[in-house]
Image 1 (cartoon, rainbow over the protein chains, first blue to last red):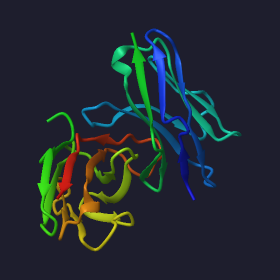
Image 2: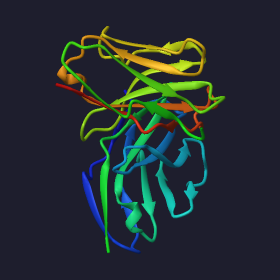
Image 3: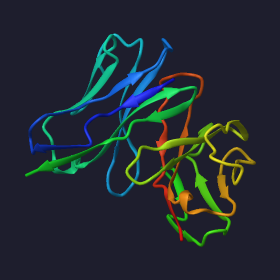
Length: 112
Length: 116
């Protein structure tokens, strides 16, 4: 069965520092996609970054990068140069048969 | 509009009442999804439409939940005889492309349902 695990319920980071949010996944399907979404207090899910299982390079989108280690089944999100506006809930998700399977999320607090 | 819209944003229902939640996807998006997000949890899949066809409803928790998308655009999620455990945020998402693992789902702001 497909499963996403996020083991960090909450994280603190100082403004301008980098932070890594952990995500591990479980699937027997060789073809899959991994996503990270940000959910601020307003509630909307905002797409951040995508990694395909066959992608050779780690995905990057501006200050976001995905540390994809296929053998370890991990897809950690790295946010560089944290900003106060990065404070939010972050969800890792896997695409399986057209639906997203989400982890339980990590609440990130950026401190000035 | 530019994004996915949902209405109402907030809904309070007395136990036993029926509710209808509306989703307007991004124009031209083929696929539409409904998710349920309980407090402090990640969203959980409810159902999926490709155009007007409901291709997957495996996540609907009971036969009190019903979704439709009759013309392949706007969708309505209906919950009959609401129960307290139905209290959650209901998120709608749409996407342009199907059949590939790389498509992005765009989410609406959600409807927060509280059953008293």
